[in-house]
Image (cartoon, rainbow, N blue to C red; front, side, top):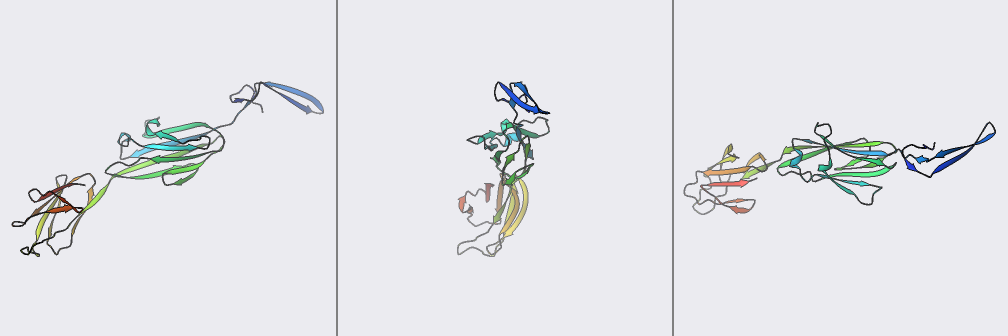
Length: 239
């Protein structure tokens, strides 16, 4: 139909339709006919697990539409928690039928944490943090991003090396390891021992390794090949 007088794009001031019914000709005039596109909608939602949004200040989405010459950089601050349920939403309405799109999440990293991103989409193809597809006539495509954060862990390896002609290569030295002032363990090593490995050390923590039983020895230490200060037979490093 002409959708005369209804919302839409005006095509011209009037439309005249000529028809025949039961072999009787007739005409019908419509004022202000419009074209209705039945537009589509793109919805992007965002949820955080084990992290507050303000801890990810640079989070953003790169959104590209086939109807636009350039992609949009959409900062997370444009998203709204409409229902106060921790799900943040950004919508683009009024899309022309069969608008192609791509949505890609950026800047999700937080120091000291690992992040896993789960993506579900009602339509489109997921590749990494990017979703590509098409919004059909009158359709709504929803893409849900859920980022789950966990404290990142690393490991520490202790190796004992004795040098000099007067050194006892079989003597055991005791190493006490503390992480953020919490003792994790004690290890006895000599020059011929296998290295001691401490697993699951949180990234960003302060690690103190204290050696005892080293009377009469000069003590030096290196961390990742770099010489560090030794104070009272202890080495403190930030992981």
